[in-house]
Length: 113
Image 1 (spheres, one colour):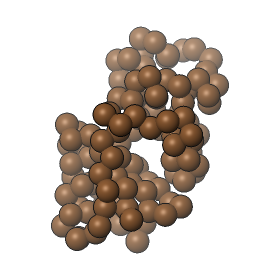
Image 2 (cartoon, one colour; image 1 turned 120 degrees about the horizontal axis):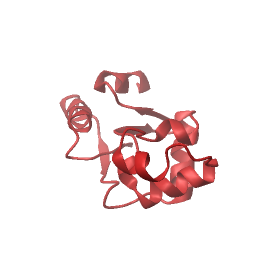
Image 3 (cartoon, rainbow, N blue to C red; image 1 turned 45 degrees about the vertical axis):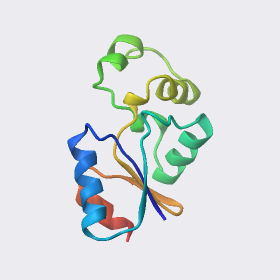
């Protein structure tokens, strides 16, 4: 089953969801702003993406700039920041089995198949 960590207010996230639906790919939508991933879930996603935690952060968000930018943060600190402010999590994230990708642009999703 494919999972998409989705923010309905985000155009790129909506495009990714539309791509999955247009290809009739069975998927589960995770509204991560409402169902905030745990630290363990975030760590698993990051592992599947093959990135460092900071690479999953939307560093242009105002909350990042005011509360975190310029500070020395551990990976754990970054995970905690994403849990406290899920808006900081890059989106959309598409997971298929042990692989994941940030679907920006949406066509990148197709590399999972």
